[in-house]
Length: 120
Image (cartoon, rainbow, N blue to C red; front, side, top):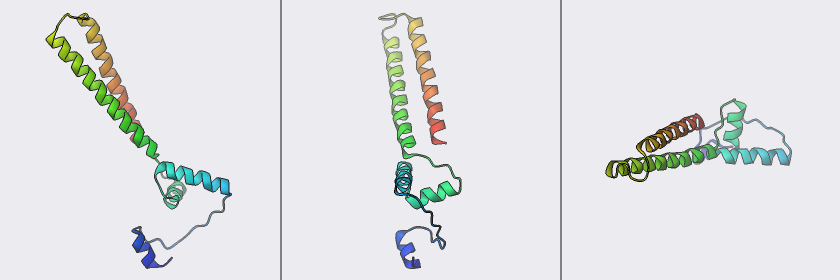
């Protein structure tokens, strides 16, 4: 590959190439995994060969979903707290609502822990 072609593609110039012989099925499986990770085939093979951790794009999408759920939990807990402040003693006993608020906080903490593990 000519040097000017490498520069046009915007990648780092690399001067050495490694050939790996695979079956069509193996190539398809490797290409699928590279796609799931959001990497080119070369970048995926380089990361795998250098024993770098390969994160899936789906991990990041799942974390985004968890962030939204965590926000929803916070909003529900806030509305519940507002309701308690404006209409104390109506609908549920205070200790029951306090227990639910504690459960909301525990769920939010659990979600935060899951998100931290997913992005590492």
